[in-house]
Amino acid sequence: MQKLIHLVMDYAPGDLACAEVISAMAAQIPGDYHWHLTSVHSFDTISTGFVVAQLGNQTQQLRPQDTLIYANCAPRKDRREARTNNEGEGFLYGVLESGVRVMAVNSGYSLSFVRDELKELWTLQVDVGGSQFRSRDNFPKLVGQAARGDTSFLIERLDPKEVIPPPPPSAIGYIDSFGNLKTTIRDGDQTLNNLTPGERVIAEINGVEMAVTVAAGSFNVKEGDIALAPGSSGHSRKFWEIFQRGGSAWHTYKKPRPGATITLRR
Image (cartoon, rainbow, N blue to C red):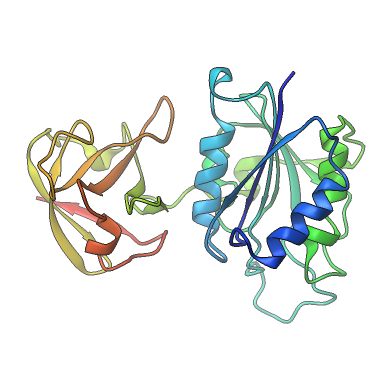
């Protein structure tokens, strides 16, 4: 049986921190697992959550049966006062309706996009302090235990609705390498009511206004045009994207960050 661990973290590929985490994980994870790293920008819990949901909610045809996600983006902004012993946000264990297991720091929006799909969520017996580098020093041992099927570290079952915030509405959720702006606007959202393919609307992000074409897909607009259309993320309920055919919507919109609010109007 194929086995896969997704590492989702705010360390750049090739960075020393990334190498140290992978080394610490390799010391704990059984050798029959494949690995993959997805990197997000520093402290970007919105993109972290978006990635966790896209990978965690995949159907069985798109992933190995045994899939485990280890997500660590911990800006430690849950409290503004000085911290004792490098303490940070809590580390949680969850099981999605898909069967994918998720181990993640409960920071910001890191678990928001799977909030409704978590059929189990638990606190863990783990030292949340003692190190500035918890993703290397504290967490890999527990991920290794989970990979071996040992969940003796579970302590208290939680209600996801009580401890995880919902995703931000009408915002940028993730920016891909082509400069496409994957939004948190989904099929069925009220924001999309009465929009008709082919019409032009104004999409404003961080004070930058652009006329965009409501489209049914990536190639329903002319080269260079900016479009708003259902994207490739979101599975059965697609997230919409703002993209520029043959260009970068991110550059055209003056490089907004994930979380930036999107306003649509005629």
